[in-house]
Image 1 (cartoon, one colour):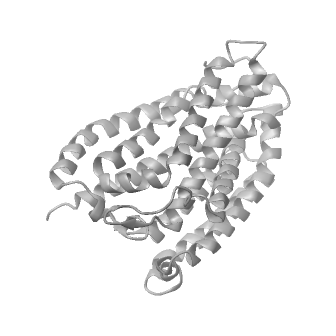
Image 2 (spheres, one colour; image 1 turned 90 degrees about the horizontal axis):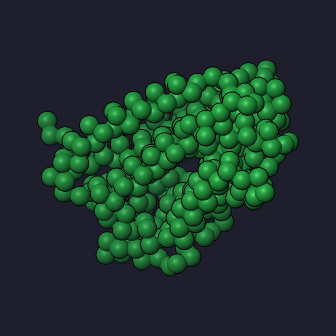
Length: 334
């Protein structure tokens, strides 16, 4: 039986994007909760929790974006003109954030400036990612295999709602990461930040979920008609159970449960997007197979990926294993 290389690559790129969200999401979230920590010592501890892994987490963004360019060139050519502005803002935010990450350890006078650069860079990157997602969900106008929309089509109430939702969700991941990785005052601050972030995330996920079916008749069909309803129904049920698990973990002040529950919530939202999108890679009209490169190219690239992907996964698992456990004041890697 012949392999469907386009579908395999779509799953690989979707996996890379999901891994970026679950790994770099809490990393960006640390920047978002930075101003709510009480002093410089707590901020040092918070930054040390992600210092060994933050740059490795962004590998998955490169893999997702680079894979889209190489494997689905039509999708890349359509999407980039549609979201040039938020993509540029996201990259600038990541640059400022990365520079701040290194420079804040090397200065005393300018440390607060770099702290705020770290926070603002994280905020811009998180908002931009949500806006890009919102622009994709609401649909990209395509004519003659090219982007046919305007410069500001990405800027809508729905895309802004998605931007705020992603930022609040990342703040939840950052707060629960601190709960899991720290002790004493930093852990307590993580719990205090996590409660409003959890409530805000649940409200925003609900708002985006209720709005999405009205954006396209296909979305409405996927979520409210048979036989698609049979596939989609477990997602809201599992989401409700995950929200209960998140609340229970915060209420009982568990170390691991809130973070794991928040990550599962993001995964379920991603699965929901997959249900809405399939088989399109650029809603509402460009399918996975329409956008794919020739099978010869897909096969050649798949061989290289089959070698490199396990290495990246092994390194990521090893890094998190080496730096597992609580981070205490005075300890760190930077």
